[in-house]
Image (tube, rainbow, N blue to C red; front, side, top):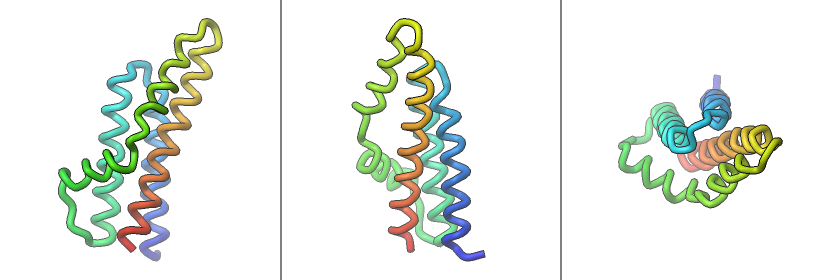
Length: 113
């Protein structure tokens, strides 16, 4: 297997975990869980590409690349719409979490290559 193929598999696995984390009901636990999943993603990719990894560097990546906190908070706010808000909010949060993890993985993979 090529490194790119392995990297895509790592990204896909972490995107699935991120989508699942997006369905968690507690917004603060959800964001901390998503943060941890994305740290694992960066750790796995840096290990694959044999690039030095420190958690401090990874946190800088996360702050710089996934700083769309406003979008995440907006997805959480959808929950407060009576009736359908919980369903729409859950789906949108899950999609947003997966998309941000996918984007982070793609940027990291191209950078490490």
